[in-house]
Image (cartoon, rainbow, N blue to C red):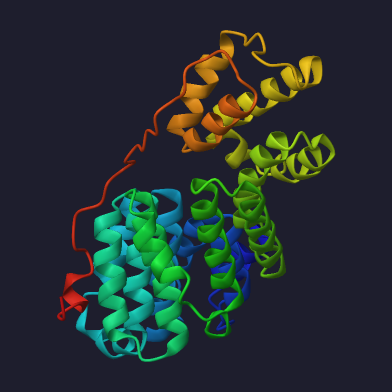
Length: 323
């Protein structure tokens, strides 16, 4: 895929950019999307709209990969007055994408600020519903799930595009799990995974599937656990990013198969390290649920949200005059 996209981008013969492939790269291989973006900028046959779309693509890919340099360079380029009319057409998406960049970096107050600014600009019910999902996710991340849930429960799914329905299901899964409703949470995670698959966003599908893994072990449903794990293992980046949590699950499965349904299982010391690592990878709640359910002889862990590569504040301010 990448070789084909790069070949198209490197030719200056007037052949248009392959936007379908580029958007697929952003969703599934964002690092390669950035490479394609940087090569495309050297072409001499692009329209102003092409440049705008490329910079927008770079913002999305830079958000996912924590490539602040590319993201900030693309935003700086869009300050050129030549793009003013195009930004006016697409301001809601631009501000929402900046909000997503903050969300990935756990700068949730900044994410909410940008999402609310985007909502003030939005005229369609679809955009407003999608932004409510993003705001709810950010509120949940700052331990205000009740605010998030009050937004989510009033959203009409019919206004959402498929990919945002997946986001809504993911957010509801996280909130219902936090409320102790693991079976309901599992249904939401499975719904989200299916919708991401239908949208061909396999990276997001595997990411949300990681949430299902822990619930399958809570249920001691080893067959479902391995079916989902086989899919997750196809993403090397994800396996690396969640290595401590996945190691926790591997060791927990081994423990359960050795002494299933026996209270106070003899917990190996290595699981303490895996538990702490999993907490840093954002799985403290799931690990603690396992500790409770199976009476594991290790202390519970605290959530440890790490802010990775923070961005300067209010990057969207040039296009947000209403907050």
